[in-house]
Length: 226
Length: 264
Image (cartoon, rainbow over all chains, first blue to last red; front, side):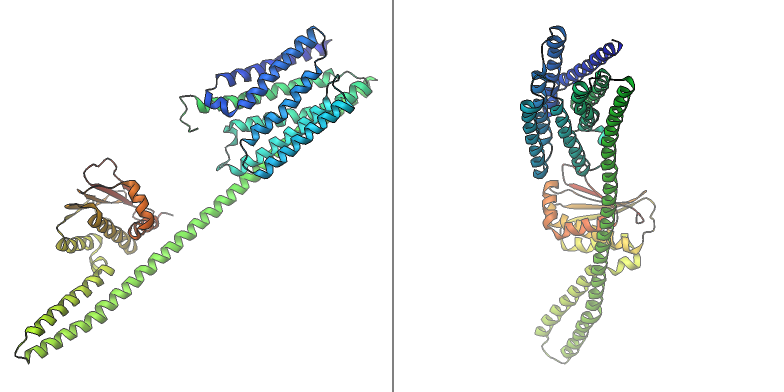
């Protein structure tokens, strides 16, 4: 019971940080919002899905797994298009496209043959994490080769990369083993999901920092060029 | 499931998540520091290339000046000397003739040729610069230019004169020469003022009352004009800076700031 209370509390903290990131995105001037519009879309949709999950699943007891699966399928192409607008190398873009196609193929196989759509598609989420980690690490490499000087921490996208890497590296084993732990070993997965939610707080914190830095570049007081 | 087994499973998961986080962080740090090193190596290489190009430019200009000096010497000593000898011979022949009218015309042409050879020799390598210094050499240059055009040229010296090595003086002289040539050709000025201001650097200011400079035209001409290229090369070698006064409406003002010694 205590674990469940902690899980709920950390979940609320995670949603609060998500909301904070969404607000920062919303108050960014139009030109800045345009650059990060896909991140904004991910935050908005994620917040909606979370609220629906809380209301539908937590209050009314509905199975919200299909909604979660749709959100999972939405995130990968969203980040693909986000990074594509920033990368000029055709080879890297092709690699990203191939990874995205592999992800969709796996998601389909998982939905039909492995976990189905009534259970949480944790394997699909694990694959998603892998793909997004590869995107983030590759873009980090691109960023360090193309910049005239190494001042990465000042770049908004550095924080987006950090967010993706931190969140998906920690949650990758969680998603991978949740199904096995719950169905085969029959143990409580609440402590593990407390870790998941905690790193979710970190994820939205890093995203908020990145969005705030992006906003700072576009406010009238800024002397920096776009 | 037994509590101890459950703890073991949680421990394994914790190690797995921790390991993944450390791995992701290590990859990011590795890429960052590796690229930082690559960047520093590239920067170092660029500095070395720039130094090499500087040395090549120095050697080119040095050999140019050395060649000019040699040609000037040959012109003055060899050809100038021979022409003077021919002049003396013609004078001797003239004393033996009754009608010297045709010979006088030839002697005049020869005098003009001797004067042209001396002028070319002076322009190639001003002897005054070596003997009497930069300011005197520039004054002499201005007097000769003034004699052939309607443009008045003033030379002013401000501040306490400081010693500059001969090589740098020669480069400043060449820059002054090119700036004057440009002013003559393009400015349509009636008055040009040259100021040598000895402060923390030597400031060479060339100002005229002509039609003024269009900086865009200068950039385009810079790519085609050998004169402007020569100015830019020498300015670069001297570690000097050139400033064009964009506020000046009636005419142009160019300031070249030259350090007294070569910066490291």
